[in-house]
Picture: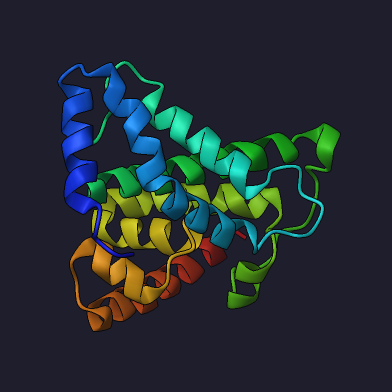
Length: 190
């Protein structure tokens, strides 16, 4: 993620918060390519034939962010955190609707492994992961942000390190801890 437009994105966000209606229209072209890349990375892990496409995920996340009366972010970095969280919320909502009795909600849960990252997990797993992530957010918000950016936004370790302002080695260390913690936490719920 290059920071070539970072300062202009931050300026546009600040203008939007100041009440400039034109600034919201200027923001989308600057961030669309990166949002699309994040959504494509996440949706590429889904099974074929999904009704939600990366473009729809980007549009839904963007509308959630700018559709509020005030843009709830203060910088480019914060905008992408909020976008990753919005994408996560959208995917969790879809999982909840699929988990209902009309859509096969009685499926069996599988253990969280690396193999799950390459296919769409069953709705019950997404919901269990959501509960675990809410607990993790209370315990360690930084580690929860890493999960959001890696799992839900599909960022590489290098991109996560850049966005969070950490070394890649530190992000790897946190990621190993989070994976072990999630495995332990999700294993307890079985």
